[in-house]
Length: 150
Image (cartoon, rainbow, N blue to C red; front, side):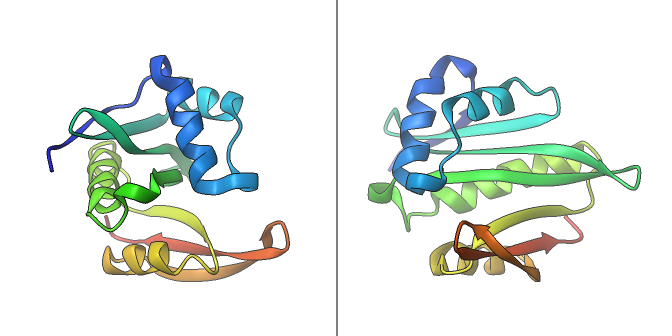
């Protein structure tokens, strides 16, 4: 498997939106929301390509909390066919490295309570459950996770 990580770009917005829909169905970010995130000065995005084809992407942003930069991962998407091959892990490590470069000492994200594969990945990467987010995904609870230090 030839895996390459590259910067995400608004030029491939249509492709990213299609992947987002496949990964998250009704809870997917809209095309406009993904475009907004990609254009945000504080955002960081990467695309994973396997043999030249987009297999997944990640978008996060640096937010100031109590005047300190904190990384916030907004979405991590890996197409079902490409899951369990280390692509999500690589995307996470890439974005964490950029967050750290930009001065963040902590990274945060939210995940669906029943998304066992994602929660295991985040746990292996050092994220800790901080809180349950009641009805965060409609009728389903979310989990708020944090990694500190990066």
